[in-house]
Image (cartoon, rainbow, N blue to C red):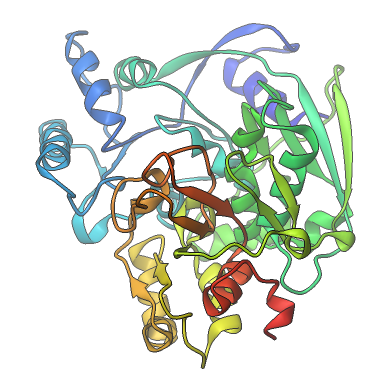
Length: 417
């Protein structure tokens, strides 16, 4: 079975499709942000066409916001004016904005069987909810905003069979880091990574969102999880009907199978400067850290903040270290306030940022200077990703990040709790 091909086949209105076929499909949602939307809008203007559907275009100002400088302010203004002129229904700005891939599921905009295309590589996040979702360039987004259609080369699929259950302090981030370390940053190039196995039922939906978010770091076109009881319950709480989605086998099956027993996983750390440069936290070098970041579209959800606080509560951040906590959306921020999470993080010495991508891409709210080292729950650690090209970024899960903020060096949370 390839769930991605089932979705593409149904949307294309074809009786059958095979890997390598070129198909045209209508899309259910088109997404862009304050970095990718301006170029898309410029190119859209050259088409002399109206938007195909103001209900199916989503614009989120989240990367350099609140505006870090004049240039970002002008970009946001440009997008804001376009959204107002075209009466875009789903425009998120100011107090309504959050990190797009945290925000969209919460807003009830994603449901199983959808095709979602975004001007951001981590649009693959929504595969956790049974959608075929992927990133494209801004000129493609321009055409999509006008026509509502795009083309795909039908991807081959790799079946990632997940068995077992996570240990304490191990989660979705560790699974995906381990997988990327196993196959490399190009090991799934233009494949659909499709997660199955009895271990899936032991992984909550927010952890699945983390996993799907980072399949692109292995080169994948998209990631996909089955729509099970947990998915249906998650969507139901958001007022989303999960509907009926076909999952029958197609005649082409999978091009490869990878089996993972998550019972054996330990917390993982990606060393600079690739997400595939992965080792266990026990093997990680005890480098002196200048900054720890907990947040991003990968790990900025309420479950991530709860996990980090469980490790760090009642203690103090290591002297000389900056701990930056970034709730992924206004909803997450509000929930963290109501649960006392924000207050507790303030008490341990953290800086609380508004919902924004911020330091993840070296935007603002935590840019690194030359020689500084950061441990982060974000999704990329390329050279210069979080600031100066002579800085270093290590990737980990929220529990490892919290433990390391206490000690000032990369630390297994089991050593703290």
